[in-house]
Length: 574
Image (cartoon, rainbow, N blue to C red):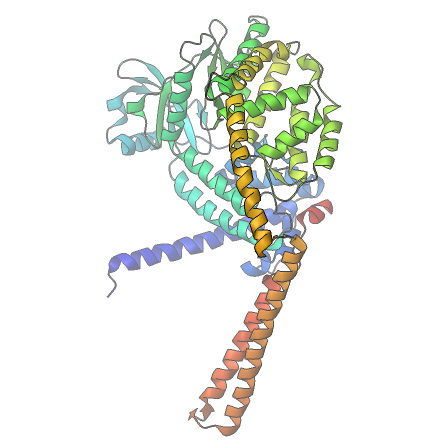
């Protein structure tokens, strides 16, 4: 006999289901007001939600572009969707450039929560009163966002720190919104054609992992500690220290760095060339020495401290690259600098994950057109943002998935380039980058290092040479014995095969339904077994036939027989 706990759990599940359904209705109405009603109607979501009355788009939605309406939609949907937009803005490989530019402007315009709620969060995390572990905490926060807000404080030892406190109740709200996002992603995959390279469920799952990492301040603290260790002894860059004993999953305590945001610095009082060189050298060291780089180096996350020292903040997003990825980056940069379009095409094809066989000749020709638009020696003549954007757009067009770390690196490079362009556009990047490229190339072809690229290449060649005779012998034996087979894959054949299977299932269900109908009529005629004058077998046969007909119709409509909605064509109409 079930106890009270299962009943309570059932009530909670029912309550959460109704909350998710209400949230889904709310999202649909807001989306319609932003001009996406056609998508909701054609996807069948309106019918699913039982929505009958029309929702008119706002006057602004009638005038604005699709990208701007999408940004406004995310902004109105609240913290989870704002954070989704911010995460997607770092992935230029997922969306067109216009969307990336709009999403980059998403801001957390949320009011701060009271200090008492911050105290409650600290009390819950450490089991002590806040003023038992801090000497003082300023009431007015330095910054407030949808996930957390930051207060200045002083430790019991007298150290000036900043305390990042998670917004109360945010994890529960994000959980509910993620549940709805997973459902919406499955709906999109069912009704939209353009899901070949990056599927909606894949994007939502990646965002799910990213947002849970951001909600866990221990993860951000670990990133900051790793960056701190890497930059010890580097005079031009300073990373704030993490106070581990004052850090938990919902509270992060770090050293307070007193400085000015680099976007607000007075260039008349600072050496612009020195600052720009420090930023560029720090970026190259993170990439080619540490293998750990800051994933979001926008101007708000870079401070100028006394002595023109740089202070880096916010380590919620970091990128990690392996030695092999470093070698690939050097080859890619050199190929771009030499305008070697064929090498660029092969490198991008190799590091990516092709969704299908790509046309390398067309890919190379398109890359050559892009490279011809760029690349003088000084920064002022280089438009790295457009170059990287066009290369990523091209990869997506040829259905090549770019790994996440390269996409984060692309975003970081674009942000860094924007800062350098404003600070010191006359800088010669090649002068600073050349020593790092030479060092990595020397390591690659140094046979004394087991990790050297030359040694790895020789080992691979040896392995291929030793395996080739056995593989050829196997092929010849299979040919001689008649066991040799060739597997040919074709998307058109697979679609035809899927349609034939669907047709067979529908025909089978139809035949069963017909059989039940015939049996029902016979039962009605003979009436061998009745209850209250009603032939039970006849009724059962009719119900079974109706169910089978319904199953066959559902299979036809949603099992591949219904043409999917082309999002690209729909958005072109707007």
